[in-house]
Length: 92
Image 1 (cartoon, rainbow, N blue to C red):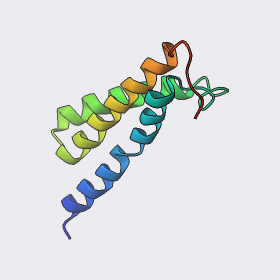
Image 2: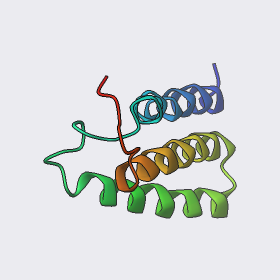
Image 3: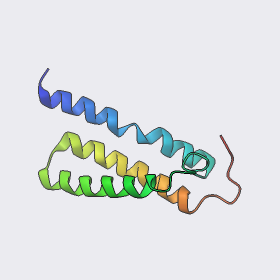
């Protein structure tokens, strides 16, 4: 197996790690109680994802681009429901 294939596999696996949390936020309408008590988690995640996404675009590294594109989409869902939860969110 080539190292590029290893990169594709690894980054695809990393890309799907944020999707379950984004799905939970979408279903329940909120990030709570998961992010309660972790005030720096979301700002650090946003900063890290956006900076690395810009860097990966600059590099043109397609396996990493897949990873960071999926993570940015998942992060957008999480940020939306963190700052604008549904009025009557359902706890999962």
